[in-house]
Length: 134
Image 1 (cartoon, helix red, strand yellow):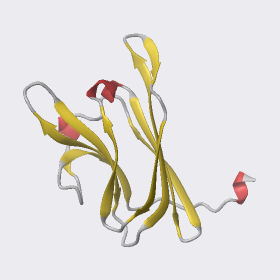
Image 2 (tube, one colour; image 1 turned 135 degrees about the horizontal axis):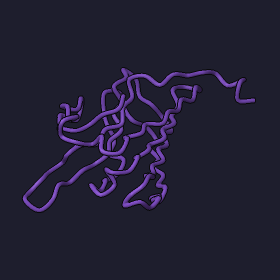
Image 3 (spheres, helix red, strand yellow; image 1 turned 45 degrees about the horizontal axis):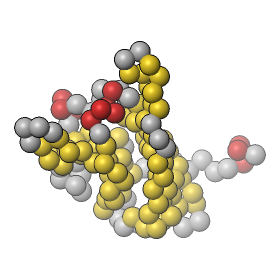
Image 4 (tube, helix red, strand yellow; image 1 turned 90 degrees about the vertical axis):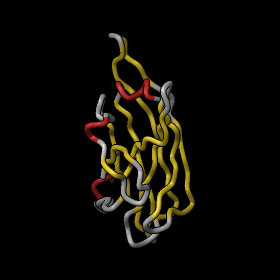
C-alpha cells in the first residue's frame, strides 16, 4: 500500500535552529520552519523529539506536536524554543504539509553536537545566525 503513494520530494523547505540572544549567563535558541518556496504550504504538522545517549544513559525527550494552518511563501514560523542541554542528542523534526491536494513529508535531524558556532550561517528569511537543514 505504501508503494502506491506518490513520491513527493520536499524542496525549498528548511528547519533551522537560530541563536536569538545571548548574555554572559545564557543563550536563547529557537527552532524555525522556513518556507523558501514561491507558494504557501498548508495544514503543516511538525512533531519534534530528542533522543540519544547522555552520560552513558539512553535519553528520550517528550514528543511535541505543532500545527500551522498556513505558512506563506518566503516566510517562517516559530516551532519551539530549544534548550542547549539537548544539543548532545539527536533532535528530530518530522514535517508534513500540503500543497493543493498533494501531501509532502520529511524528517530533519540535527545530529549530536551539530548545533555549534562553526556550523553557523546567516539564516535566509530570518537573517539570524544559526544552523539549517534544507
